[in-house]
Length: 212
Image: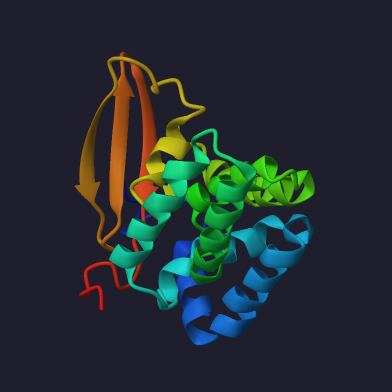
């Protein structure tokens, strides 16, 4: 099975086009779509969702990653517990601040869903879950995962688990090997028995820069 064809790497999502468009006009291709995602996410088509999810790699973080993850950990710790209305309200305020920093963090979207349910605001909880679902479906729609020329494409290592959820390999006995592609992304080849599943991970432009 060949990873390359005439020197180019293919997937059903055109990462190079998204990179070029978002880099040249981030407002049009990323930020304008992100604003819609915050208010009316279901109105976005798949192309616009691709620009949000994959285009996020090509804009600045806008926050300290280590600080964000520490704060997210404190939110998640409580969202997964049975807590009082008062405590949920308190944690929810912290979650809202994080949401403004990183609207696309899927763990945070699920935290918001749970916290809003706890404070009896079902509609808002449903809204954040719909955002999560759209991002999840964007990953699932990015390829078939059945061939190296059509992998599912994710933007973080943690999202690889989401990519694997509907595969035949996601069970006891799974193994994998990785290869670095010419563009710097990783191709993970998962195997379980005779079944193979391919997941490509692209990374943020500033992933290896100091977290300042």
